[in-house]
Length: 456
Ligand code: GAP
Image (spheres, rainbow, N blue to C red):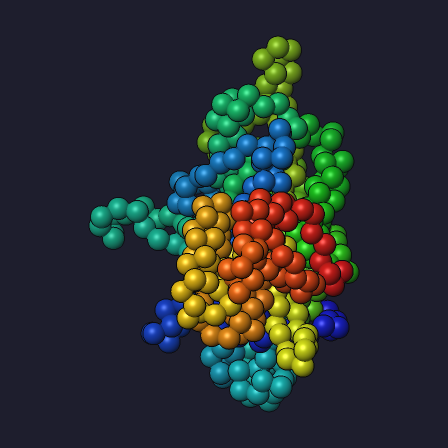
């Protein structure tokens, strides 16, 4: 990671603290002291994650005619991982310090802290006693079967992609698709990561949103470029500032065992530029390997002409949790409004966990409460909305700003007199009055309008 600093107020500590305070994300198994690099998602975290996933599926499947969906198993036949090269090649080089008993990625020593003296790198102090690097497989192993000794050793998948490759024949036939076409999948993956994760940037279990795009071999280079552009545009469409994104082609020494060309879409995190999403040209590696290992030919055969070929694969692969983290970081803002500071998440309305809050100005006024509850009951049928009548109105606005709610609807004295409510816009703070009976249509209309990050 490069030592580049962002120019805005956000830090990883502020994101961690906001996530904890508002219940987006918190450490897993906390009452037992937590488990490194594992996190649980609370109410707003779940809603945000579901929205990120929905926007990805929309762009990758619903808005296209050439991509279909799949949900394959997490535990696959162990031979899948032998054929894919993961048993032999999905490793990180690790070194141990015999003195402090810490373990480090050999290729990340420059960015690691010595276990005894955090201001130094491992190996820099006189007491450091590092072993030579050893390859460490990142796959979690478990066993299938009732009896430990006779059970079959299996792995928790470290990527969703292999479930797609081994289903190529099924899906291509059932979906009646001809290359170029894609298969998209969202699901959990597991990696025994030993380096500390920068919050949810790198965790033991995470969700991936991967799409394998099968193309005629001579079109692979062109489709690779297409998908790099397409995926970059998706992050921008949902609010990530272009100035915080860049595309970095991998050098030959960095390429995964299956890839002939990979570009990372990198984001400028508070800790520096790092991978957000990878786009790889996997060539015919996976379909060929599974054809050879399983004896089932995974190739494209044109029923009309008899033409046959092993498609090449272009793969955009994005971590759902990492994408969520990126949206949170890019949306985070602090500003002073009327001499008071507010923290605001400027999330795209399509991602915001709550779309609108319904607030009676005076929580103790029965008339306001009953009108506000009626409006809330109407809106919750069509959108994720929240009702809040506790505390001063300014505090309630700030609570919603902090979770990124784009609109607040306030029922006040004027509502009782003329049947209108105030709609307050999160980013501009503009307020307008709307007739109660028009709120639902107006809200849905505003939520569907194109949105531009006001900080872009
Ligand atoms: N099928 C290809 C593949 O898995 P990858 O670059 O290892 O490629 C793809 O992973 C994406 O998954 C990454 O760009 C990142 O967003 C996410 N990812 C990978 N490891 C992760 C981890 N330990 N925690 C969170 N996200 C992770």
